[in-house]
Image (cartoon, rainbow, N blue to C red):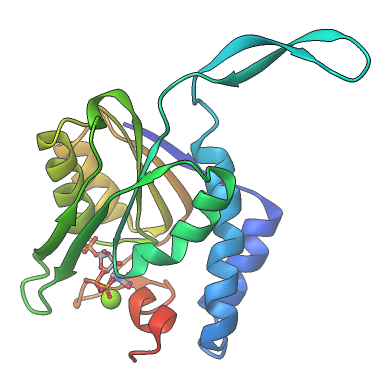
Length: 208
Ligand SMILES: O=P(O)(O)OC[C@H]1O[C@H](OP(=O)(O)OP(=O)(O)O)[C@H](O)[C@@H]1O
Ligand SMILES: O=c1cc[nH]c(=O)[nH]1
Ligand SMILES: [Mg+2]
């Protein structure tokens, strides 16, 4: 498994504001989108390109364009929706799949409730968007469902990861690429990331 921790001053700065319990929802959402842009740039670093010839106003020159079919973005509902706008800003022609999962409060096992994936998953880079990687149960289930539907080139993009979640994914999906803003210390006994940022879905959508 490949793990990229995006060690960037702007990510550190924005994460410190995102973590702050006093940061209001409107700013929390905006900051997630801003960090999401940086994560999107990092996550797409290895997209394949091909040579093309372009006529500038002055001369012909060689240049590079994206080679593969449009990528697929799969936000894991609900919190993953917070990362979708920056990814679509950078890749406006990307296809979007949706996957609804919630964690059962007691067992922490993910419960699937919605799924709609675009076609040709096998031929496209697929980016799973979910700001929180806690036990890893939700991300592992998302990867499992996408692999069953044909995806082979899979990356997970998260804001925060717990070591427990990374270990789980290493066991379940060693072929996965992970791009993450920070790796936190541990989970608490309710499966929340410490120090973390609280409940990402609730803070994004005001359901606290
Ligand atoms: O790694 P895990 O232990 O599976 O936890 C992470 C999951 O928990 C959160 O979703 P939640 O179930 O709170 O749903 P929500 O986004 O609708 O709030 C988060 O957005 C992840 O999907
Ligand atoms: O800390 C956590 C863990 C799971 N989901 C969240 O939103 N936050
Ligand atoms: Mg939640």
